[in-house]
Length: 557
Image (cartoon, rainbow, N blue to C red):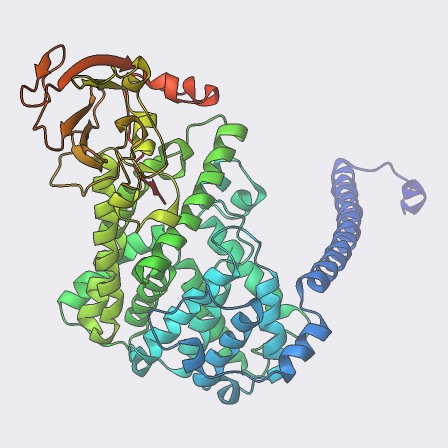
């Protein structure tokens, strides 16, 4: 065909061949690009269908929206929203949404930005729906973070340094800052080379949370920013992105020194965009960790939830990655949780709340609550160091004297010194009386009661050192008082002696025999070594270590 087009009938020259080859390559690239474009269009169509399906299932239903739309919203005082001591534990799921809408109302955001009320209701329900049912980073955590921000703005009087767009962006960011959290942190995403880690190399989960926030806003009937001008829309989305990314503690550590320096220098011009961004970042971190400043009964429950979620990640690292997790995620090291909480408070929480309180004294309750909870955690850490074991949070506040001695004798290797008391003219006490007893029934005090059936009740712990403490337990019996001393130490012994009521003391050291000359009572002592394993069920005997012995006097967190 080309030859036919040759005008003069001569063969093609080298330049003609070169031009033709270049043209052929160009045509090939054009055909290839056309095919790629067609494939891209198909992929975009598939993605759009997938997003529509995701949006349908991620968006709240019309029925739920209409129901919330018609309900009355209680006052902020009803939900205690203005208090830094707010707790969601008593709120039903429906109340969490009502409380969220109330915060938008009291900040005057609905009327200020012309947000359709039905759209706000659907957006709140959709945000709640997109939180996974993990143990801690769930919808209720988001509500608590948003409430703390609300209290900072209102009770802490920080709203005077913010404009309306700032407040709107911060509240939205608080509610969306952990969207679609999987119960694992950024390090886990990187270790497992998850798709999220491939998409975002830094602040992996935080970028994902922001993307989920944008996805919900772009879903039909959920765009609460629909009435904003293009400029305001860009501004508020910038605030939301910045605030969500600030919840990454890595970002906090990068910015905290600069913020501290700014406060020390008295640079309080919060109208500067750079300084306001720093302030908003510190506020977001303060809200994110605000559970550490709640009343103790709330804080230790939240700490249990956080620990459980961390332990679940640690279990995954052991199973999937065959790696040893860090201490705070290692279920086998749960006894160290109180001390780790103290470290978390000292490194992050206290410095943050101190610098914020210096600048904004009205948020001082956060610093006070954090300081008080540190005292509680430090107290528990000291108890653990003394040999107590961290198990369950339900009995954290239970005083030591309420726990029976039975719990202690189960877990410490001890020597029982039994006393055989023989009275003149009386029948010698049988050998069974010399065996260690662990009865849980109390003596009613009516008539003489044998020491073997008495129950020891614990006295109060004195000033004791770690892993080397003792307890004197006095047991009232019909004819005397039994005293037991327990020393929590691998080489500890449990010595029990019997003091006669009217016959005077009849206790001697091991292997000795004392005779009471007044009434002829003879007190005999003998040593019986009871290994720890005998008191443990078979399932736990293999786990017992000879070099480390802990006393479980009480169950803690």
